[in-house]
Length: 202
Image (cartoon, rainbow, N blue to C red):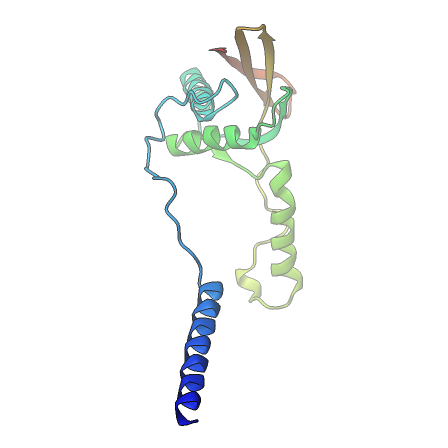
């Protein structure tokens, strides 16, 4: 009788240990290393597909920035705003990303100042209202309404593409066009474009 009770006790301990281990396995995250990840050169030519990629963005930004700075139009650090950049391709392409790279390079040149774009304006209005209407700030430290600097120039652009393919080859032609308008006069003061062709074999 005593042997049976010891046996039963041992069986119960083993069962509870296995159950506890099972619960721990269910609750503990399983870390698996299925593939190796390495850092690459952000400036390296990317040719994974012939769709619009990082190399295309970089080439466009470098071409537009260099062309703008060569004109000498930015005398006296004029103010510029980014208007619309239309994506007329069949792909989903974040054209805001292209313009952000152009804007960053131009700002770093020290020859131009950017004011808020149409898409960014509401955030500026909200901040002015918060400072002036919330009653939380000292009056001599708040930004005054009506003191924003207007843009002298406005940038507008578009990205288009032509795709041709047959059973063996796919050819994609991209063209990015950028214009700089004088806001007051409505004249185009500068315009340039960058063409890119990518071909892949099936």
